[in-house]
Image (cartoon, rainbow, N blue to C red; front, side, top):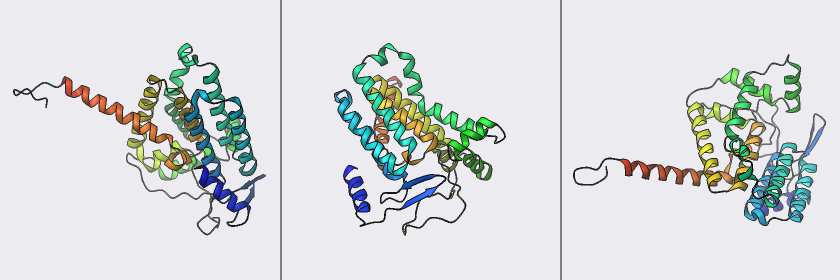
Length: 285
């Protein structure tokens, strides 16, 4: 990830590939050789999380400061606010676990919000989207702060609805196409990851996804993988206003989620086999 990020950004800064600079709504954002400003910021966020996970309690304050500076530089170029703030949260979480290693055992009330973080964030997303009313001042203000993400989600649900097994939906976003051209059509992109998967993949997948995340987070807790819990919780929060964390190449931690869920399911199957009645020949059916 680092090699790809450095090579693309370097190529854009020296003019080998274009570095598109877009100004809109008082914000100036550089794409740094990518097709959208959030792409390099999300790659760096994933790298920051990976570094914290690899180093765990060995991470030093100096390392955290260096990572803050790097993320600050990315924020300065791309104006990716949410990604920057959550990267800082991951680093703060790493320092808390380093200097207060027993905090998760002592403050068990912190555990449940982390385990159910994806469920909590999805419920908040649905409540805000379905209940949005632009005549309510605080809702309107929040929608503007979030660049109309709430109203766009509500518009999408009103237009396409929600089905059990999903449907094909085409939204129009701000990213460039392969020729570096912006779309001239009306912007309709739904940034909320939870609304996206609910509409595209359906209710069945949505419920299954949340079930898997709860099991995975509970398994992380049992294994005392607290750094993973903090990282995944920050990703859950990020998914409220950004959908890029759904991709493996931008969120490596889906692999960890899949691994622990697979192990949990294998244990469950093994227990079921042990409890199953034996056949007359003594073989478990």
